[in-house]
Each structure stands twice: as structure tokens, then as C-alpha cells.
Image 1 (cartoon, rainbow, N blue to C red):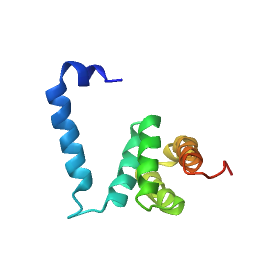
Image 2: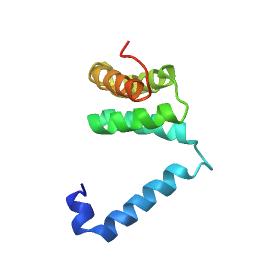
Image 3: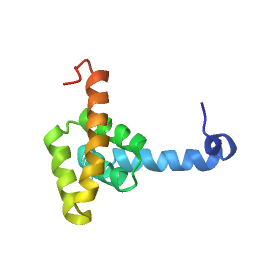
Length: 108
């Protein structure tokens, strides 16, 4: 189902979507895994669980490990404080569980 923005501003959406695809595919400065780790942290700061789920999936698919995701969150803790880690823990664990289930794993 198309969002209201996609429906009413399709030219704007197409431009935005093209920009996102170009930035995420261009690996001249940062590889996709690194970009997705950054996107996870920004998603946590924005408290967007849908975004966290999306970017954890993309990071894992790009070869990130759970340890790398935790490492990125540790930098967030240094920069934003411990309360951010408490909130992000539940959201990231949920996203990792969803990724594992979608890829034939178990909920362990």
C-alpha cells in the first residue's frame, strides 16, 4: 500500500527514494554494513522501532554481526548516556529476533 506521500507527491517520493538508493549503494567512503550500523544508531536516537527493525535486517544481511551492532550501541551510550542503551536494548533484541526468524533461525 502506497503511503500518502507516495500517492500525492510521487515525484517527490521518487526523488527521495532515488537519493536513498544512491547514498546507500555508493561505497566510495563507507561500505553498506557501516552505513547500516550508523542507521541503527540514528534509528535508536529517533526511537523508531520500525526503522531499527529495517536497519538491523539490512546490517545483518550486509554481514554485520550481533557484536558489531552492540559495539555501535556502545558508542551511542558514550555519546548519549546509559538511558539510551536501556531503551535500545529491547528494540534491537526484538529486531535481531525478527531477522533470525525470517532467516530460518530460532528465537534463542
